[in-house]
Length: 84
Image 1: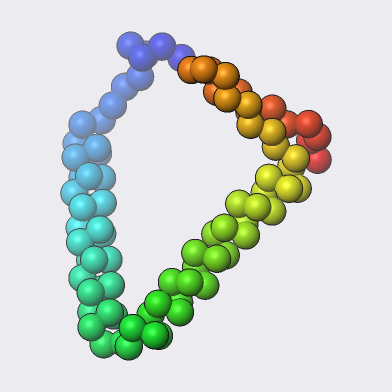
Image 2: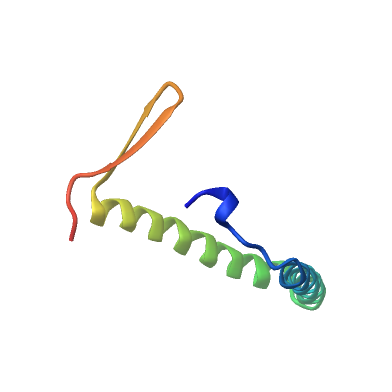
């Protein structure tokens, strides 16, 4: 698909950007309130669980798919030795 063939509805894009901005601000306000109303131990424990689960998911993904990442100068290649 060529770039000149892509049609963008600017009104929809503008509305999407506004909603996205509001959602981000709402989340920041929520998180600030949560941090203010919960102890450091409580919210940092939740963060540790989240971060650890993300790391484990990444490890499992690469282990299960046997992904090999080869980096050669400016070329990045991802080869998969087995597809399930």
